[in-house]
Length: 442
Image (cartoon, rainbow, N blue to C red):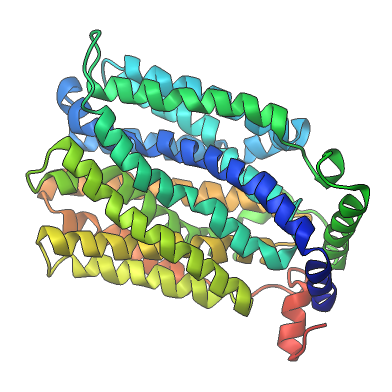
């Protein structure tokens, strides 16, 4: 199986490059805007909290409600994708969350703030697991970690570039609107435009495009079909049985640590950096540094995972790095040292994502992978909602950033350990993994 996959890649490298350049940059742009709409609330808080009289706890609750709805609607959104197809479903979701993000500019108090964050989370819930599944419809298994890593670059890039953009937009004031309102309006509109482009430009599989030749379509489709058929057959399980499956539970716990670190830092990092006496613009520039460093390391780490075809240790090592950096905040307090530690936290969080999602698609059976992706993503989001809320509560009660990081540290450590306590079952092991257990690649 592995030899056939490698043979396909060698003989059809041009086709895979063509697919990569046609799909991945646009998917990255969509995720860039998606994540920007998700994290700009962190910069909005620099003015929004004061104008609307929101406490740290209330702000943390608003951030958590986004993740709660993200979790609740992950699996239902998966059903919508199956019903309408990836192209139509994701295009619709992008238009919807763009409109809701722009509506954030109309928030006047906590109630509407909570409602809109909940609705934005519900609209975005289907995008990421949908795209991860979409990648499996286009790329062979041995390509997926590098493709996922490239696609996931949109996350640190959105924070790297978006931090400077959001910091600049926060300086805008006029026509009766504050800087945070202008930011929501100007950063929400691109989602609507990209949603329309998704409906027009994308296709659900190789056979539906006209930019591949007939032979290229057939070869790619056959390679993907062969990989799926080579997986041991298994009956599709119910959502409940998937949720309580030890493999899904372990992956969900690991992803909880991976996601929580990145999301919480995106929401709270601007306030931490500004506490050193910086302006909004300076805060935006410095906030971009950790994300810029994480962007570079993320690509290199994903390639390392693909070259060795190793996923577990690449995930565990990166996540452990985040946990250790968070613990180190108790002993360093200068601005420069804080930026270094924030960089290490984000390097660990983001670098683990490519190997992790490649591991998920390998460990879950073909019939379970779509629903399993949604469950793992949803549970991770729920755990992140809890840690985001706890961060706000601890920060308000103690005034300590270091103590507020402790729940994240524990979750990251538990996520690292979890992967070693849930080995793949016999019907979940891919042919590649079976070959490695036997000492050879078939």
